[in-house]
Image 1 (tube, rainbow, N blue to C red):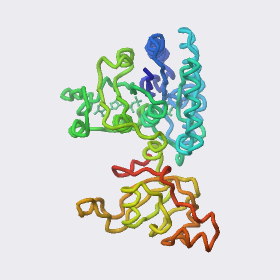
Image 2: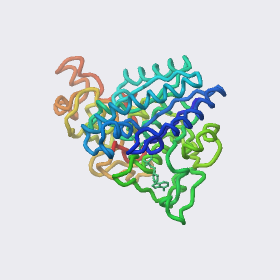
Image 3: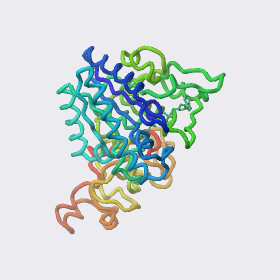
Image 4: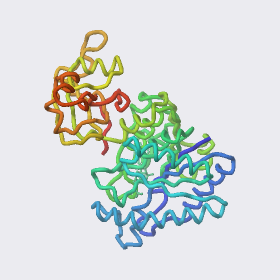
Length: 383
Ligand SMILES: Nc1ncnc2c1ncn2[C@@H]1O[C@H](COP(=O)(O)OP(=O)(O)O)[C@@H](O)[C@H]1O
Ligand SMILES: N[C@@H](CCC(=O)OP(=O)(O)O)C(=O)O
């Protein structure tokens, strides 16, 4: 099995004392056991910022980005040093992989990221992944490692994603309250209907609470990867696919990797409004977006950026004739091949006309079908 394991800050560190070495050891023991069975393991570890708090004397998790970046710079090295040392006791070598959003949304970058993981795993290395917090600004952040882990699970074609937190399952309410009950299996949205999801308060070490974990589970299961959510003390059983916790069962088939990144890891840098004919062509015929179907363009973007496609006012007709989506909703996201400044003069015109008037390079699509993903649900942007 190829298993991606994500561990949260709250399970690895305490604000006052820095890295909790006993918990890191327990986690590494469980992962090493899986490796010795022949499983491949990729660890997505949070905790860089939390691990930097104590050495910098900050007292608690900083709120401003610059201090978070500084804490991550100090903490990430310490964290990986711990992992390196603990895994070495079991005879395993670790490799640090720090990712930014661009690494998984740009075509050349994501291929590169895939190759990196493939080579590390081939060499028997345990990749330890985190967001590159020290250089990531709020503009270009994933923001949460739960979603990063889901995307990594898809990127490396994992058989299982294990989310380890400080709570042993998803509960239907606040797990600290006596009447909250754990949910053992999630097979679809109906199993989540009665679940109350709250983000942790600002003073906590962890960031997203169950909101980001459920979202990560949706991404992974929607792409065919099963998910187990439990706490670090149950890591060993979870890695065999058993034990306590919440099991999220696959709901969808695998999609081409890059399109999953595009749908979930990015938000559009701008919006292109398209007419009903264009929406039908994209959806029914898998066509590329041509200038003729464009009605308007908003935002400031350059060729290569992810951009949202929005249906015109009034929406578009579904197969039964009725309106399938209200006007103004995002129907697709894709990598655009023109800068926003170039598009207004192309609007509504045929590529043949444009090529004759402006030159052969204007015959190209505004968005190629291979660089475009239809969004089944309202766009899931970054936080
Ligand atoms: N419905 C729920 N079921 C379980 N835990 C929940 C729920 N709603 C909120 N939580 C909180 O989410 C916390 C875990 O999220 P977080 O602190 O972000 O973890 P991590 O650092 O592991 O990513 C738990 O400690 C729990 O208090
Ligand atoms: N990349 C950040 C962690 C971000 C994050 O998602 O944290 P958590 O909710 O604890 O998994 C860090 O290493 O501090």
